[in-house]
Length: 124
Image (cartoon, rainbow, N blue to C red; front, side, top):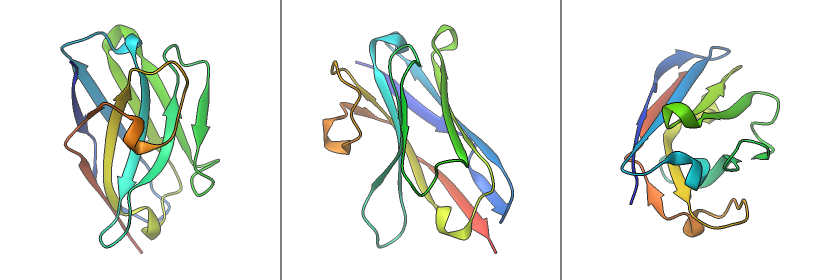
């Protein structure tokens, strides 16, 4: 079982940047495909980005393409989400999750382990 802890959230003005980190413990991160998800108040959880075990494949939600970048450092057991050109509609709690499946997927229910989330607030 892997434990995930997100960090790096905060309050930022529109147009600014943040980098989220997701640190894993209890198991080597390279065993998992990883995803970032977010949930805004009153809205359903949505997939933001996902990355395969070795980082060779990535996928992004259309709403963040060109602005967000997912990456991983398996030696540090950490996954990152670099968020640039932030917009007020990016305000949400951001979660990282780990999937032990073979294929890179974006459906949240297919992910096995979740962090507690970190709040990102973008002011206009």
